[in-house]
Length: 234
Image (tube, rainbow, N blue to C red; front, side, top):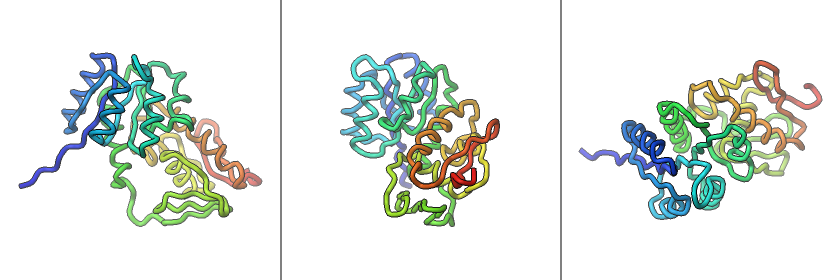
């Protein structure tokens, strides 16, 4: 009987102890793992071996993680999970110019890292999308085509990163309804670890700016979460 080849995860981390235990947990979860401490070597591996996902440290000895992520993005939509030692770097990591799919701040629980890797890969292959979703969502001047992964205000397309699109689609499907940060983490990122919700806040800021001309806005409901509403009805 033929066996399914395991997906390859590339771990780019210059701290040997962290690289070792991350690789061990990923291998135990059934992934084939490649490791390197070099940003340049990571880019070579990405080009030659086409891994399914990259776990990428922000601070590397040659090319830093932000630059590596930018170059990966120039080649396509390979999922990237970024690691950082400082929470202040989060805006830079998941900023508009970089577009990492997710991030974790050191120290982190390796079981949570594995869960996030699984969630990102499920979303990348579409297996986590519920059947029967409306193909096109319309809220005011905003239209979202989920199959084409296109969002438009009138006839003008909005440029959105992968998670920005998923976040906007989720809010649009629930227009006027408050969704908690935990619900958004579960529906958009696909995991249930609720310790870090700042990634939601940063993505909301970016999406809010991108839909500024739509007549809609994302309202912060203090202490609860977010909802998409008509700007005049907020």
